[in-house]
Amino acid sequence: MTPLAQVSIQDRVSASTVLFVEDNEDTFWLLEELLRYEVQVGYAEGFTRGQRLFEVIAHKQLRPDLILLDLQMPREDGFTVFQRIRACPALVSVPVVAATANVLSQHVGRAREAGMDGFIGKPFNRHRFPAQIIRILSGETVWEPNN
Image 1 (cartoon, rainbow, N blue to C red):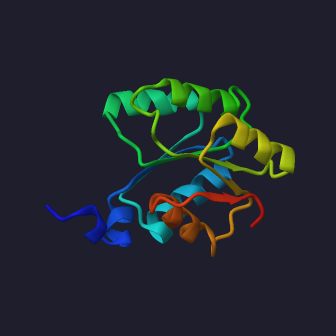
Image 2 (cartoon, rainbow, N blue to C red; image 1 turned 30 degrees about the vertical axis):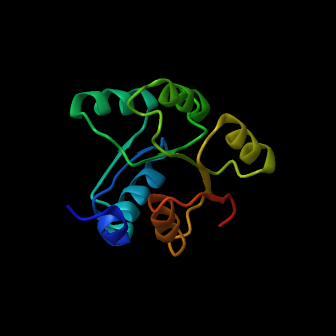
């Protein structure tokens, strides 16, 4: 078995599972495209509702390496979904990064206070986003509300 330190960043990224919750159809497809083809994660799947995230994780027995979470959704806001993620024993240590257009300082502060692991502002910058995700999957903290 290869020690973790000897595993390349790209190998780690290509073995990663990234899940996201996003209700906007255009952003949903953009996220999926960026994660699969630009970042080249091993597995990426998106959900339009937080409830669906939990159903699929349980059904497929997924163990995500990262969850990207929109904060403003019609049925259940991202902070509520985040609380449910942290209450789930299988997900308690999974990094959860806010991915939202709510980029004012009070929104960033609320995400920090809630205990989120990072913040990426929308609209996503196609040139910066892959590096942001790679940095997160490599263990860095990314708080970049403005792209």
